[in-house]
Length: 296
Image 1: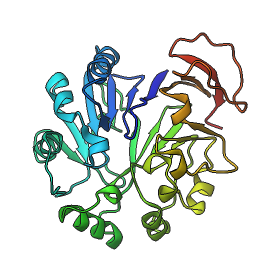
Image 2: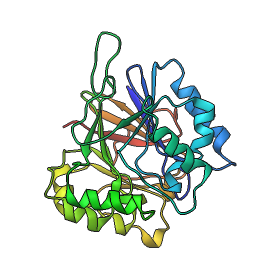
Image 3: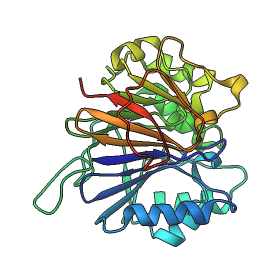
Image 4: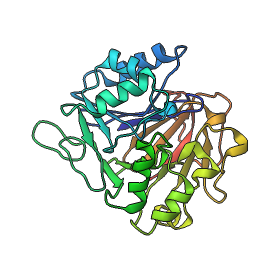
């Protein structure tokens, strides 16, 4: 089994994967001084005994790197994954400077692009199995992507330099992350790639309507569950016609992934949905709300 958790961190994003191999992955960082000690304690506990700890940064906006300097101080991030970029900010912060230091460190940084491969990210050997992480986007020579890189370099929005990352458990769930990709950008690139099928999608841009996934991609993914982030409710797209969990209401979301099924838990004790199967699981990772059949 593996555990995938989306932490409820307000207006930002932060996830981790405790793999069923010698790997631990953190995706993005959004910690305040009020919650960072508790989050780091959880990350250290979940990653204990793992030989590889990697951090995947979708893009360097504050709500995706807040607390990164503290996280690096506490966990010594040796494997830092991001797209190759020269993003700048008009108002540099300690966390953005830490991002740049890790991004530009040739010994720590690995640059993400469609189809990239790396030992233990998606390659196995005698020492350890791979983590099951594959990158579907960016296509580095795409003109729209080049424009997004240019905008980020000039101190503008970095949303559209976000990669699309896929995690797959053999025989179990396939899960997609899309950072903060915006609808207009996705519409412009949607014919550049064919989207892989997925059981679970974390809706981009915190579930905002401005990050609505194109219908063509949704048809190709055919997700069984879409998780909508913590943007203000008036800005959310609720993906009519799809099964959804809204993190604004659910709180932390933990997914215990095993062959053929994913057991889902939330931190809100009163949250519930009707589309999941009830397998009477104990509340191991919070309030058990049901089980999703996956991998079919």
